[in-house]
Amino acid sequence: QVQLMESGGGLVQAGGSLRLSCATSGRTRSLESMGWYRQAPGKERELVANIISDGSTDYSDAVKGRFTISRDNAKNTIYLQMNLLKPEDTAVYFCNRRDIPCVDCRLIEYWGQGTQVTVSS
Image 1: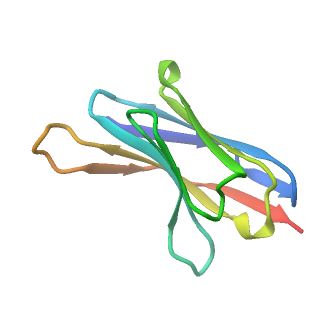
Image 2: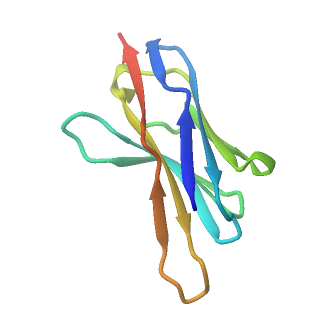
């Protein structure tokens, strides 16, 4: 059974840093990508960063140059290093995993429970 276990959120002042972690359990053979999304109050959930099975990464324009996504395959864990945090980064951050079990299979998506990141001005 796939599970996503997030950690690392908290309260930080503007300009500070935080690191989020997301460990996944279950089979990883069909894992296609993992990433981070965030949702601020009254707003839709949006992509923050994504890392594909081949190691390529993708970032939203809002965080490019400040956030770095990485992974440790041995630990089945991804990280989001967040630097130069701004008040507008305040949101609940969700870990996301996407699997494609077979060539003709539909994509299966999993979500973590979310971790709060609050950046004070």
